Amino acid sequence: MSAKEKPLPGLSQKLPFCPLPRGVGIRPTFHGFVYLGLLCALLLGSINHNNNLGYLLTFLLSGILLASLRQTWLNVQHLQPLSCLAEPVFAGTSARFALTLAAPDQEHAGLDLSLSPDAPARLDLLPAGQSRRVELNLPAPRRGLLHCGQLTITSSFPFGLFECRKRQTLAASSLVYPKPLTTPFVSSKRGEEEEKGPAAPLVAGHDFSGISPYRPGDSLARIHWKSLARGLGLHVTEFEEENSSGAFFALDQMPGSDLEYRLSCLCYLVLAASSRGLRYGLDLGQLKLGPDSGPRHQRRCLEALALYGSGGGSHD
View 1 (tube, rainbow, N blue to C red):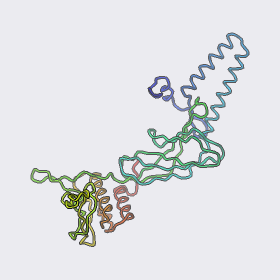
View 2 (cartoon, rainbow, N blue to C red; view 1 turned 135 degrees about the horizontal axis):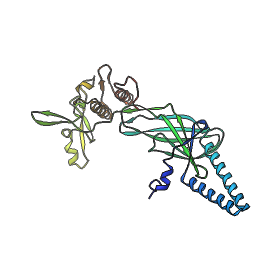
View 3 (cartoon, rainbow, N blue to C red; view 1 turned 45 degrees about the horizontal axis):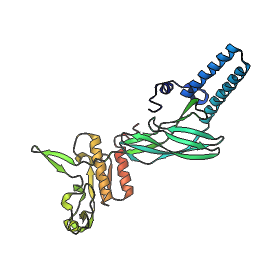
View 4 (cartoon, helix red, strand yellow; view 1 turned 60 degrees about the vertical axis):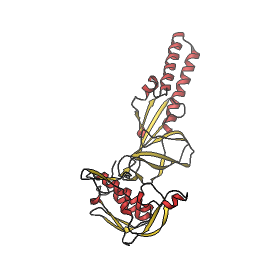
């Protein structure tokens, strides 16, 4: 049984944070409650027996408690985010923000950093005058521009008697591409379902240029059976493009009525065409990208798909 599943330690996690100066909240931990109970028992025993040594021990332990409270509060103060960067991701995954923190004045230890309650990261030590890099995950359920929002810093250093929390807004975002649709397109014709492989429109010519290793999504009609019979593995035939202008992937030609589904289809086609080095263009109605190839063109197409219909806005 974990600490969160135990009833008494879990009870302290439900307490609200008491506000302190500089935007910090603090609350006792389970061990802090036990410590306070022992102090009360010592104080009552000292009063009952009029024991001076008991008074001395009670006040000494109370001083340690107050010193722990102050040190825990200072441990989450004066942290400076220097940079926060993230690479584009696909919808349904998690964006990974690379956060660089600096401690200009004092040393910090035992910090828990998070952009989402379900994905905290631990920073054990941050020496004074130095910086450390921490990777934080944030779920990206939808395409668009994902803002990281608030950084939550919590700590119970040094004795675990109190838990301090500070929230700090970060001006950073990550671009979220549509989730590539790897299933084949399906359209009905005379009551029968006709499967159309999404890789079919990517073959633009008929001039044989060679063979290449089989990749998931390649048409079975292009399998090179002779190389398979020779024990060379599964390969497919490659063709040169007869049309130098390349293929165009248009949004209004994608099947289905759901916009996100159609954008996911386009995303898969863009990735498939780029992996094969083909020239292709993208038609999103008001926005058209001419046929081209290469990583830069792929990035432009994916960005257009991610921000389609948002006007450059964000999807939190």
